[in-house]
Image (cartoon, rainbow, N blue to C red; front, side, top):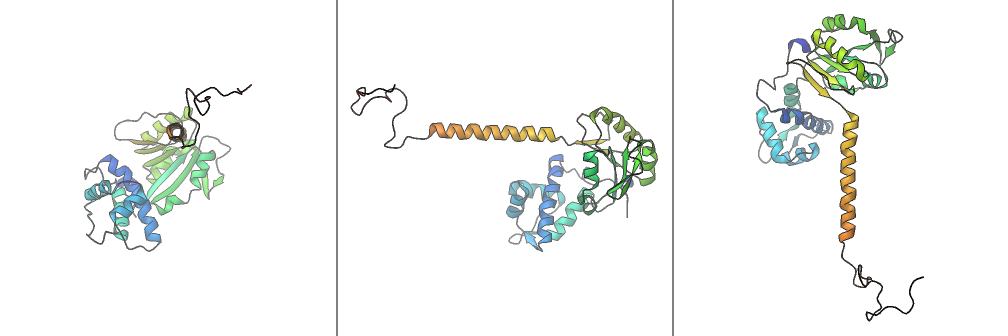
Length: 256
C-alpha cells in the first residue's frame, strides 16, 4: 500500500475550491452512514439534508469531481464513497504521529476512527521521560528525541500537535524540518509555518464561543418575540392608563 510521504491528494491539481474540499468529509460521513444501512442510491436533496448543505451547492461540489448523478435515480452511494475517498486521499495509508501524550493526546490515540478513514497512528511522542516506554492504545510512547528518526522511518507527512501552547511552535519547527508537510494543531496557539506546509487548527474554546453567540441571539429573539406578542382581547392594556377603571376613571381603591 502506498504511504503518505510519496503521494499527495489530487484536489489541488484538479482545481477543486478549498470550500468544496472542506465539505467533502461531510458528504463522506453522510454517505458512509447510508452505505452501512445498505442504501443503494440517494438524491441530491436527501444527501444535502444529511450533510447540512443546500442541494444546489452539493451538485456544484460534485461537478468538480465529475459526478452528476442520474436523473430520477440520484447518486450511487458506494461509488460516491469511493470517489470522495479517493479524492481526499483516503484510499492510501497515511501514517500519523501524535506529539504530546497528555489527556487529549491519549484520547486521540484511543480514537478508533483513524484506521477506518485511511490513517494509521505510527507513533506517540512526548517530552516527558517518565512516559517513554509506556503503552497507550497499544502503542509505545517514544521520547521526543526520537522524533526525526521516527518520521523518516515511517514516511510520516502528517503530524498532530497536542502539547501545551508554549511548546507547540518548537515541536512544529522540528516536524517541518523532518519532512512533515501537514499539521493538525490542538495547542492553544497560532503556528508559523513555511510555504508548502498546511496547518489545520482545532480550537474548542472558539467553537464554544460561537455556540455562546448563537445561544445569546436565540435568547434575544425569544425575548423580542414575547414583547411583540399582541394582547389577548380581555387582557389589561399596557402602558399609560393601565390603572384606570372600566370607564376610564381612577379606581376607588388604589394599591397600597
